[in-house]
Length: 244
Image (tube, rainbow, N blue to C red; front, side, top):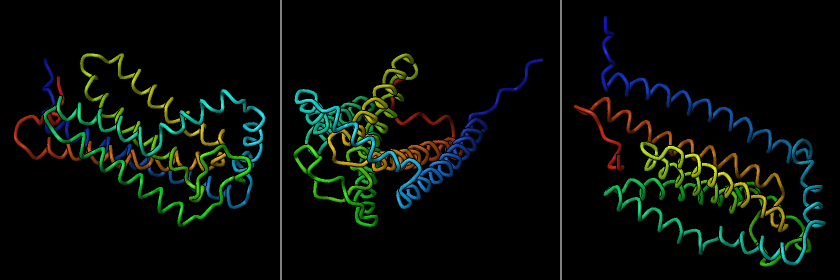
């Protein structure tokens, strides 16, 4: 006897439950991890005890050629090139999908990331490493969290999410490439800030944790919104207008 297949709304209800559970677990884990980082910074122990040794290693590892390359690479995560690349990708996806969902999600993700960076720096007020150990151009804002690290992770993460949704059905191997490149970019951008003496290691770790938490909120809300639409609207709900 053939078992009845679950309806679209039943599948949507299951998806909604799973999404809520994953989002809740992620929020709890990331909040706990962020608290541990903040506590280690306040007590100068735990992971914060590696701040000075890692910076000393970076100072010893610098060579003129490699330092120039890292400085150039770090600058690509600044306010000029990163918005251009992001805008091109978002414009392409919005045109391809014939839908403004990529634009809306990216604006929300990036806007929240910038707000978190500003509030975090002003509220925590942590000093940067000594300026004599930094590579120009020098930064004048507070150190925690690392804005380059936070914004790079959020931008790479939201673009990877959108691109993976665009390639998942027919080019699944490409989704792994996209995810790997996004992770590589986020990690290397954060470590470049430590290498150049612009941030402590825990500034970068904190930025990664906050960035992952914010990404989980944005992506989780989008998935929940879509699952709710699937439950309330008659008939199957398409994934915006992402290509099949």
